[in-house]
Amino acid sequence: MSEYEFTCPDCGQQIEVNPPVREATLSHGCPVCGASVSQEHFAKQ
Ligand SMILES: [Zn+2]
Image 1 (cartoon, helix red, strand yellow):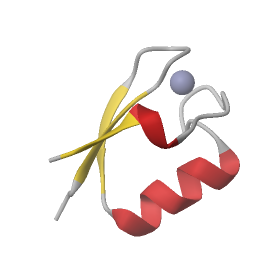
Image 2: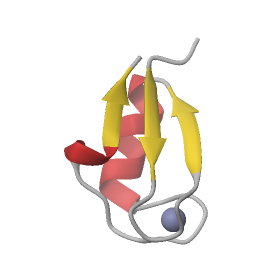
Image 3: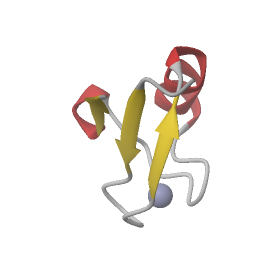
Image 4: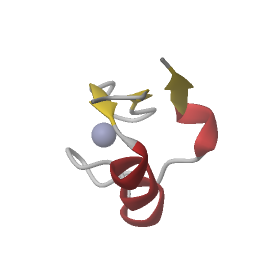
């Protein structure tokens, strides 16, 4: 179940994520391009 939509500010990739993946992405960056991201790049579904 996805609860957030992530939009990468760098590569523009949109990915639906659940809370654990959201946390991992905040820590490690975009899974596609590795850009650092912040909470503003996640929209609650
Ligand atoms: Zn990216």
